[in-house]
Length: 454
Image (cartoon, rainbow, N blue to C red; front, side, top):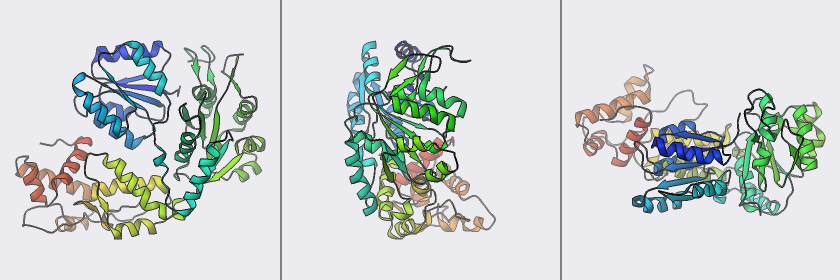
């Protein structure tokens, strides 16, 4: 069953078990892992907060926190640290952790932190980036509607940032210190969605081994965001309408009503008027949700946002692990002129690819790989300093015609140069005509992909 969980990252088996037991005794669902690498694999939309140790083999908790902030900036992260790393924990709070705990700590401290931060929104208002006049007006309007209790429906294409806008409205409201619970109605199987939304009692159906609160209960006092609401089936729409009208919910298998105090935000990328006409969506539910409509235009209709959002994505993806590169003028022009059928999600993908492809400290036009490209661009060239093998356009051009994989060739060149220089990073960087930090970044990416680095 898809219910929000606390992710515990602790490599000490005994302490991991103790943390898990304490949290579960206090009615939290827990997913425990033993490394940062496992935590990144386990990270999904069901995680409501993270407790992580700092000192672990492999990736430490500090770098895990930065990776999570890049992937899910809204997820609350509490770091657990020994006395010797308090300074690092304090520094981590500046980078986005919501709190830290010094070992050893009492069980009640762990529970208090869980209650304080579970399902809270740890993102910042700055995550809703606007530079274009169109979105600047939307942000001003969002500030005004945030001060009310009106239900807001956000429309727009997939990937335009509807959830980011919803979180921004929550952050500007008087409910900002209470939970923000988001659920994608299209991502949960139809036969599970009712239980996820409304909760259930023990024995309500096969597999219901204990009572579980639904998303509406989890959002009590705060905001619930119903994403892709247009995909909800008609029978469940009727039950949702009743919950919104009565401001109360009943768990499956219970006769007891739970009074609700929350704000409802919703979003859809389908034409709701057409869905109503076709009988796929209830008109009365639509008007209940659509008290204040906001339309978020696609990225191609707000070109001045592209540079600002690209800079924000670069900042996140670099996450202080490397110097943030600049985007060259020709590359920026190419970004602005592109139509972005995948909107911000596609822009994020392009930025990540550019960070892999770039050579040097700037993203150039040839580093940009778009989803619709038929051919991959060449690896960017830097001036050759010798006849040695190096990562450059010339070194791979002959292989391009034979459909040779550019990324595989780049890996081969890097590993060959490392071996030739007995693993010496500076000599290898000089050999490949790369800056040392660019080489460090590329090696880190290779390690993440499981490549053995000498």
